[in-house]
Amino acid sequence: MCGITGYVGKRKAAEILLGGLARLEYRGYDSAGLAVVNGGKMNIRKKVGKVKELKAVASDVEGTVGIGHTRWATHGEPSEKNAHPHVPSDSSFALVHNGIVENYSTLREMLTRNGCTFYSETDTEVLVKLIDHIKKTESLTLQLATRKALTQVQGTYGICICSQEDPDILIAARMGSPLIVGVGEEEYFVASDASAFLEYTRNVLHLNDGEMAVVHRTEGHQVSTLAGQALSPRLVALEGSLEQIEKGGYKHFMLKEIMEQPTALLNCMRGRVCISNEPGSPVLGSQVGDRAHPLLRPAPIKSGVSLTLGGIEQLVGPEGAKYTMLDKLRAARRIIICGCGTSWHAGLVGEYILETLCKVPVEVEYASEFRYRNAVLRADEDVVIVISQSGETADTLAALRYAKSQGVLCMGICNTVGSTIARETDGGIYLHAGPEIGVASTKAFTCQVTVLAMLALRISHTRTISDAQYSELALALSSLPNKIDDLIRQNESKIVEIAKVLCISLCALVASCSSRRLCAPVPHAWKRVPVVYRCTASPTTASSWAAGTTIRLLSRARSK
Image 1 (tube, rainbow, N blue to C red):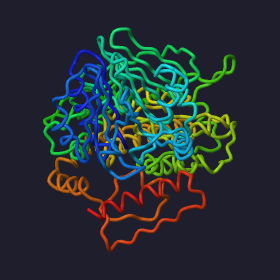
Image 2: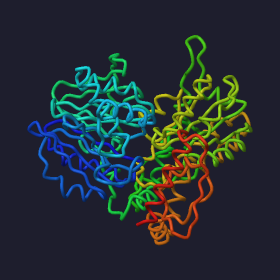
Image 3: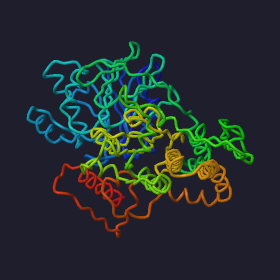
Image 4: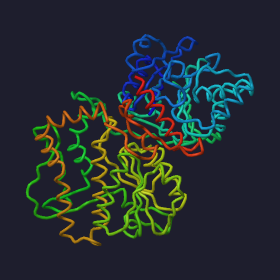
């Protein structure tokens, strides 16, 4: 839930960092902070509360290199001492961190024995002191000390470091927590989400797990593995525009994204569902209606129905034995869908559609459970579909990697181009829903269900449904944007009211596994509402950690 921003270049760093943090507010947080290097001095500002409160004390900080962070408390209560960035005793560098250092207690004990003292309760400060200890005792550069320290860390991290000793660089590294590098003209950006710097550049480098980047304001960038092997990642141009990540006149993103569903569905099907008098001529085009949605009111259809999903029709497999993913899906004896939160619910809908049309058994698994239960998979019979709006969901990534380790063909359905799931699956389908900022999913969910419906149609055509059924269903699918647009027009006042309620509260917790509680906002917790958690014997398991974290969050909510 935390957010990271970093900048090095010619502009005023504080302004860019604060703007980036404001765009990451949707992720949820309880404190914020930044560090900016200027004149050989590390300037740090932290505040419990909103980014606007940090802005009040940090907007005047000068300097052209720095890092920022919004923190969702896990280790230690929300406070300025626990807020990021964290620094060593001499403040020679500052670090922000997303993720969990699982062996932080062991590392903290070792560092304490070696004379280190700690001012916070966080696992992040332990990482800072570990880097500093290695740097000083082994006389290493900050880059080499960081690399060596990370090899001793167990858990997940996305980190960004700035240094007062070398104010021309930022260091970034990733393991299980998303991190992206934006490349501009003699300037670089680092963020956990590209929305933090989209107004400045769309050119990005995606870091994979176990990789570290060092960016220099004038000398370019270097990306390597933690073992020191140099890499040459491809520069990718992001889709989207600044307008897509702004409210656009709506009171909040929840309402905006509900209203965007017709356009999102149209974009999801554009170039995929084609219905026309002339075969191969696309019908889903860009006719602007009176609602500023590029919707189409198609003329009566006479002939020509096609559905193309290029991401599953490309050749995969080893040389000499290549096949398309569509062939494998049609031959599958079982399809397993994995996801978390909203994506899991979309999978449940997809299960009905796929089984009804394709006549193949489908199982829907919560990724946080699938990854741990040693599921029995058969490489020659199963296909695993992973669903994630961001393409970075940690449990879903772990489920994907487990399936791939078993030799199973894996398909991804995600919204973010170039995300880790998009890169690591054998093939897949993008949603093209546009950025989803609101915590409660709207357009991503409807696009996920639509993609699963298109997938089912593509698999079942000529196998389990007739041409007539195929044409009827494809035509019905193509009419969804207009039907949803009509529904919104007819019920706009009710939708505004419902969106407002959904934005400010959830009614109660229901029984579920603890990891799912971290995939949704913590609801209002009234003192008379009982909350019961069952923790396993091992305090280090992900479920026990998730339960403990949620209990702490609920306790703080009740005390306010």
